[in-house]
Image (cartoon, rainbow, N blue to C red; front, side, top):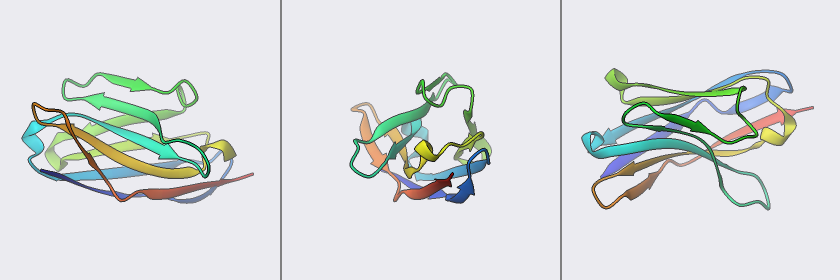
Length: 117
């Protein structure tokens, strides 16, 4: 199994920046891809950014050019650098790992990001 622990959320003013971290442990060799999702109150969880084991990245249209996903293989950690934050970025952000041949999902506990106007 894969366990995920997120950190780095908080309160920031519009236009500011935050960096989220997601540390993976367990069967990390079996991870196919990792990603960041977010869920705002009353809305469905949505993909924000993803990165494959080969390093290919993808982003939601709403964050492209403002957010950057990256990874540090030595630390088994994935980051989400969020710049030019907007109030509409306010949500609980979850780290996700797709792992194993069957494509199992693991989720972190979530971290709150609040952007004030």
